[in-house]
Image 1 (cartoon, helix red, strand yellow):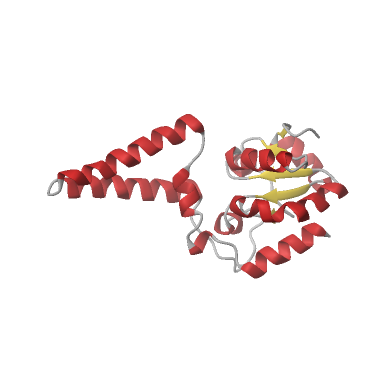
Image 2 (cartoon, one colour):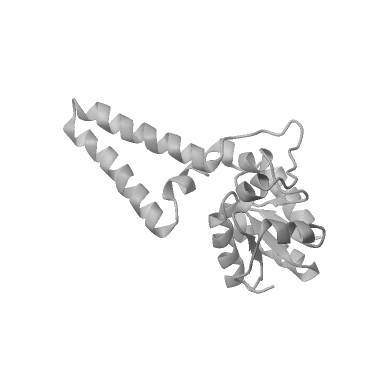
Length: 188
């Protein structure tokens, strides 16, 4: 595989048994359903996981997945910068699920809203707060304007600063033991 390759859900499904799948979504998103056999290494923990991922890459091809493909593309770029070749799943787990491919949902796993839904709630709440507070404190409208500007920037750059902030909340963080176990499994 080359660093910029993307596999469709159909292609990945046919090769799933030979791929090491790394899911870079938050633990809550991962628990809500992931590709069978996928390892959860949240995007903001990718740098510390590089040695373990490098070991896994020496044993076979890597496939990096997220909900839509945006975070997995960022992860592939980071891995490439560290000399690791990986593919990304076109359309992410959203497309994988829509096409009827198998999703694993562990029993008793904690679940959280998808990051996109968390961003919509946070952005909408902040805009609404800016509008409501702006009736009494006109400068509070700057909050709404700031969020609107952030959303435009997010759309233009295909990045999301709010998602990065929300990923740091406790329900979106991996448990230390879970991450250590995942890295040990990847390292082989």
